[in-house]
Image (tube, rainbow, N blue to C red; front, side):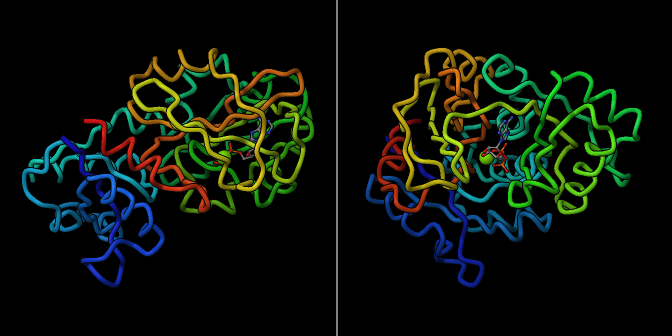
Length: 295
Ligand SMILES: Nc1ncnc2c1ncn2[C@@H]1O[C@H](COP(=O)(O)OP(=O)(O)O)[C@@H](O)[C@H]1O
Ligand SMILES: [Mg+2]
């Protein structure tokens, strides 16, 4: 039996797939899978039942593919789908643990840069008070660091809002964290994360990462990273990473991996495979075939 895939509809035409994802959806159909459509704008606006109104009743197990959404929104989507007889193949708690750093760090701690975080209190300044920020920084090895939230960085503003040259420079850490929080604004997800900076072998701009697509604990596809789509590295060595992928029980995840200067492959970032970008020039048939063939 083939597994259907839930895609995002075109915001202007309820019967068409969002133009960004038309090729992926077409690949699902060619692989023998049904494509159901979700109104992503309506979902984000808070009306999950209306967002899935065009999903056929009794669809059964279904993969979601495309735009990221907050973990709470994913839970609302799962509930609305269940009311129509459809079940997301990644449960909401598993989505959260693959999507947000504190969730995946619990199992990837040994294979990813050391990380600490400070949850942002609702409706308050996400930047921790100076003493707390210094205490947070002191929990990492001395040296440079990278700032992000639970899901995203501002790597586009590397010097002002992402890279901290020296964790011992309290004012410097605070400046970068504050600028990051400013740029993220209402989109800041979860809280502030500080990560020990690690030297990767390819220091291009951006350094080459590879995206590994794991399904049921197996690395089924390796693609370039969407940020460096034309660069490829050597085949990654994944033996030490596989146990971390399997531990949290997420069925479909991606790991962005980079080769550290000492020759060890490191996980830069984990994502829920349902919302990870596939680089434009990768044939979507590979991924579609995998998803349609897994129940
Ligand atoms: N700990 C780190 N050490 C070195 N470089 C890093 C580290 N964390 C992130 N980077 C660099 O910053 C980029 C963005 O970080 P990432 O965690 O992938 O955030 P985003 O979700 O915005 O892609 C990465 O692609 C990598 O080049
Ligand atoms: Mg990234």
